[in-house]
Image (cartoon, one colour):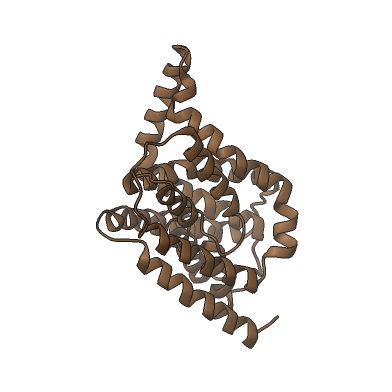
Length: 265
């Protein structure tokens, strides 16, 4: 892997981590298209560094709001009514993804990281995204049942091709949450997941030789492109629907199937 390849992969990670188009699906295509080889890097270390770049990006935009939720939640718990706080809802909503990640990681890595699964989930979630923008429901507050449902959706996002932001925002809209609240809750919910996953995998991180600079380039690229893409998405969804991303995902699903037939290995 060269410095340019590292920057490209970091950019892909940063952009697709937040836009509802699935990072895993793109990471199936991009290395093939740009002929990127792991070569001189430790893949796990590189992945952790990219996730830290994404984490810094979401903290840049949501750090203050997340901190406020934590502080207010702790005050609510101290006053004896923390069960209805946003913090408690986020904690509960995070549990499904944690359990699914710990128990299903080997299954996902062994059986689900294949082009057909990614293409299927890209198409399926696209349909749900389109439907979520067209149903008519009474707008709801973020209740505990809705938070749990969004948390379950986040767990499903472990399946390649799903998109964590795509499925969580879509689930929130399907359950009647206002789009602005859906977007905010989705990305604040990503903070503990990205942080927890990165810290958990840190025990395998290895920094050595010339590869260290490649990790840094990748992390910086993921941070910059992640922050830009997240800022763009927040503004875009204030005026537009998820349709554009849904149609893009359907096209990508078809492309993945074609690529898998051309280069099945």
